[in-house]
Image (cartoon, rainbow, N blue to C red; front, side, top):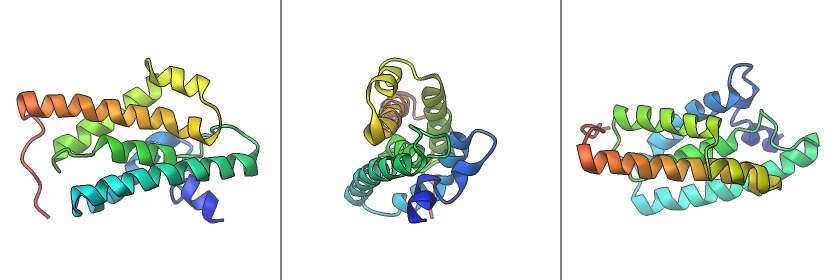
Length: 156
């Protein structure tokens, strides 16, 4: 039961409309909560969440007998947490990261598509989303440093 709850990120993966997108939206409360913690804790949680996503994906695949089922969205959650690492807590950061991450995850440009096709099992389910998160983060870090477009920090 807990495997299914985590794999679907508390039911987000059951959405009939774009479960990966709904799963990414479901990650927003976690990201906001992580922003309240020190950077080192944020990074540690990102790593633990990624490892948990791999294990959960392996177990869920065994239960269903299907590789990378649409209902598994914990990988999108891990990828989005990575995408938001060290970005300022602004609505622009959230929107920019959400749009870029979802675009990269959906289109799967190189090297994301290669990872998605070549890496099997739970590691493969998660690795393409980790890559999309890392690329999203690098792109938005460049935007932030070069333009300061990501706005003024939201105070909680």
